[in-house]
Amino acid sequence: MSTPKVLRASVVQACTDAYSLPKTLEKLERLTFEARDAGAKLAVFPEALYVRSPKLPIYISIGGYPKMSTFGTVVGDRTLEGRDEFVRYHSAAIEVPGPAVSRIAEISQESGVFLVVGVIERDGGTLYCTAIFVDPKDGFVGKHRKLVPTASERLIWGQGDGSTIPVLERSFQSNNNGEVKAKLSATICWENYMPLLRNHYYSLGTQIYCAPTVDARPVWQNTMTHIALEGRCFVLSACQFAQEKDYPEGHAVADANARNDDNIMIAGGSVIVNPLGKVLAGPLLGKEGILTADLDLDDCIRGKFDLDVTGHYARPDGEATFLMHEGSSALIIFDYATLVFGFQVKAQ
Image 1 (tube, one colour):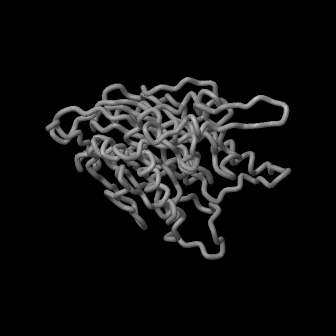
Image 2 (cartoon, one colour):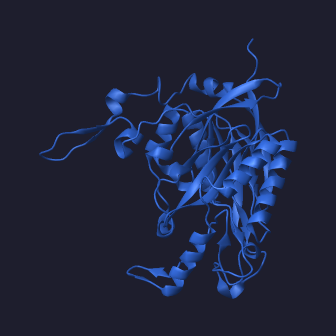
Image 3 (cartoon, one colour):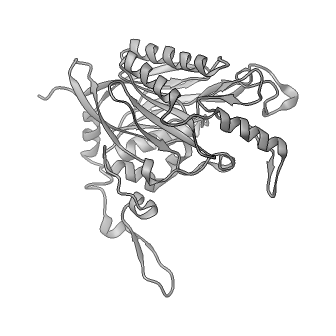
């Protein structure tokens, strides 16, 4: 019988009690080593980790999720105060790669843990909601920019493209002290509701489907279970847990007349699901914490025995999408990245 291909992995549900980039990275380091001490060789952090500043009503790197902020915007008008807020938010974002990413790479190397971390990336005048991949040996090895920011997020974040939707194949130490290779990807928050994007990752063979998010709705659990079943992959969803005290004084809240440090802004819900839809850990609600589980990668093949949506359970001859317009030829969509973005994407 073949040697089990088992990888121990964690999802980190975190907010911050720090007030500076160094303290944020210190917390990331502490949580990474806690995951390491639990035996994890892979740790996934939430979408858009943030910290707050005591002097500015905005976040300091490694970015931030400015929940309830409006940036002074209504349809047809933007205020000067909102523009100033965006200046501060832009200044707080990080370059990828850059000094903050280098420090995260050091943490990965020192701990021996592969990291998937949500950050706010600055590229010129545009910000992106990004997930970075950091390897203990090779450092920064890739990134994914959120393709479509959700609703008002589009005021502050640009759209990613097909150049950053990779599936990475990396080597990890297995539970039996051998080495196991695994393919992993990242899909941020409501991108997970984009069927063609999911199919793109399935077609490249993702086994560990990382889903950094701030979506704490109960129905999110259904989404994660569905994706695990559909893709026959492990789903690792890391969500933030945040309270009003974790935001700067005066930050927008759901009810300005009932401010309370303990009021929950983002409720968590981090979870690990296996390829047959079984919840291995979580959901974690109401507090920060770390969930850890053993991922038997052969479970992906066990699942594909009866459902492989890009293999024997696919019918490209009957399911190609035709966009028909009177007087024009049909357009057949075969590949998401190639057609929509003009990129040929392969597992790396």
